[in-house]
Amino acid sequence: MSEQDCLFCKILEGVIPADIVYESDTAVAFRDVNPQAPTHVLVIPRKHIPTINALRAEDEQIVGSLYLAAQEIAQQEGIAEYGYRAVMNCNAGAGQTVFHLHLHVLGGRALSWPPG
Ligand code: AMP
Image (cartoon, rainbow, N blue to C red; front, side):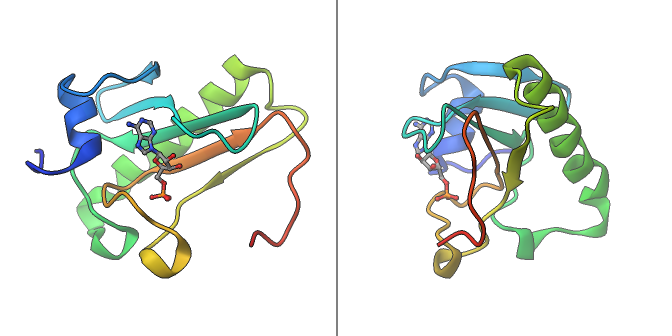
């Protein structure tokens, strides 16, 4: 399931290149092109879901798979024990710029709270 003008669907289709670090049946992860931390990976569902607000009950396992991917990526990147952040922005007011669900996995430095 893909959307014609969706940047992340194009990455899934291989039309736009990305540094892919993880793949499963339901999720793909690649390095953010504008990293905000030494590790900054985006985990996306293969299914085109624009925002958290568009999630349906049937997407429950897909969302779970994004967090399991984050866990595995954090191990691969060596940031799991120190700590990392796995966050999703929802809509423009929270800073969402790409409307295909994605989990930011950030780590490799101390992360302050609250975020800006
Ligand atoms: P958000 O602002 O939460 O929607 O996050 C979108 C993220 O996608 C930003 O951190 C961008 O740096 C990142 N991004 C945009 N285009 C690409 C791309 N072609 N490859 C990898 N990451 C990208």
